[in-house]
Length: 186
Image (cartoon, rainbow, N blue to C red; front, side, top):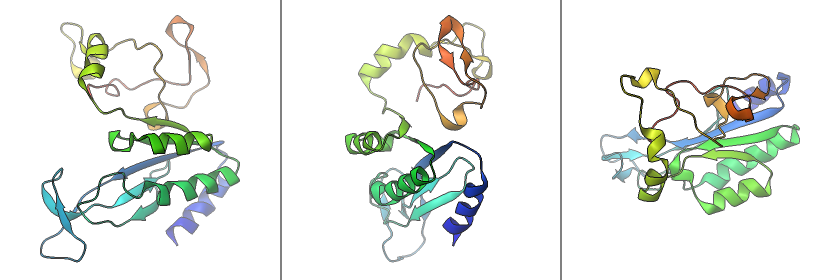
């Protein structure tokens, strides 16, 4: 029923793209509820549901799962039908997710369907070494006032304010700006 109501609103939108955001969360339980399990990451006995949101923040799909499953388990059953539905509406699909979804099978499925994506890369020593110079702030600046130039960085979704395509520093085409707190070590 929720999906049908959201589909009615989406059918009235004039947007040419659909931004989908997948994440998991923790629902702590107290007692011995069926399918609840201990999750080491959250350090609690919980359910670990998988959620899929649209750009308006509406939950378009959800799956209740035991607390012991990996964050990305079951991604295909939620994401693929929604991508197909959006593409049938003629929309370009953009997908974003955190590092738990940085998996080759997800990349391949998105690329096969022509979906654009921004999936956080898990931090590792090689990555930290390669971007170390970008992580240092000018002396005297706070986190909310930090500024840096990042070459070749492409962002999507809520990280960018919608705008007309223009030319950023160095002639790099851009569609918006990154909020000052939008870039961080993670």
